[in-house]
Image (cartoon, rainbow, N blue to C red; front, side, top):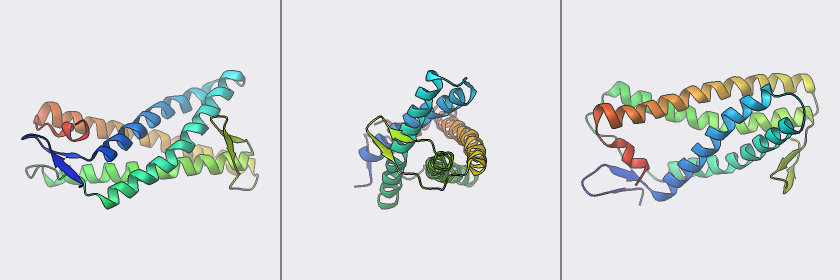
Length: 182
C-alpha cells in the first residue's frame, strides 16, 4: 500500500517513506553546516573529527538515498490536492527531483574527491572504503569545489522544500504537511 488516508485529512506517505525522509533530512541538515565548519576550521584534531564524521555520514547517506529512490519508484506518493495550481505542482516536482539528484551526486563526488586526494574514508571507525579514483590532488580540488557549490545549491533546495511545506501549512492551511508526519 503506497499511501493511506488518516481520518478526513490528506493521504499520507507510507511509514517507510516517512522514516527514510526524516533520517535523510537529519543527516543532510547535519552535514551541510558540518561541511562548512570543517572547511573553515584550522587543521588539527577538531577538523579531522569533523572530516571523519562528514565522510561517515555521507557514506551512510548513499545507500539510504538509493533505498528512498527505490521506494519512491515502487510506491506512488500521495496525490497533491486538486486545487493546487499547475505552476506550484511543477515547482514541487522540480524541487523534489533536484533534491534526489543532489542527494545521489553529493556522496559520489565526496567519495571521488577524497579518493583523488588519497585521504582514507573510514566509516564510523568500523571499515574503510576503497578509493574509486586515481590519486590526483588538482582534480580533487576541482571536485571539492563542485561538491561545495552543489552543497550550497542543496541548501537552497532544502529551504525551498521547507518553505513550500510551511506555505501549505500556514498560508493555504491545507494540512499538507501532515502527509509526512502521521
